[in-house]
Length: 118
Image 1: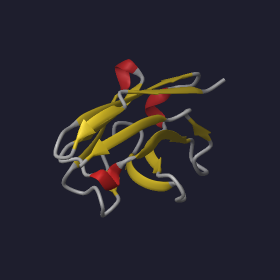
Image 2 (image 1 turned 45 degrees about the vertical axis):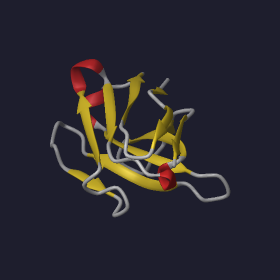
Image 3 (image 1 turned 90 degrees about the vertical axis):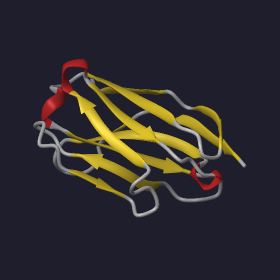
């Protein structure tokens, strides 16, 4: 059974930083692509960042976070991170991590709230 547990959310002032973590269990971690999504109140869930599996290192980002957010993975710890710098009020959302076993994002965490005050 695959489980993902996010942590690291909280309240931060604009311009500040947070690092989100997503702990993964239940399968072999290093072969799967991992991603972060977010959902703001009244809006649809949107893609934030993705890192490929097999320690390939390939990453992708939404235009809105490029240059400010960094996704990384620590396969030995079964964990994926999202370092968020220069946070803006519009980054306020519930952040979710997700796993792509190869046919789409099949597994999701419960989410962690990020609130950026102006």
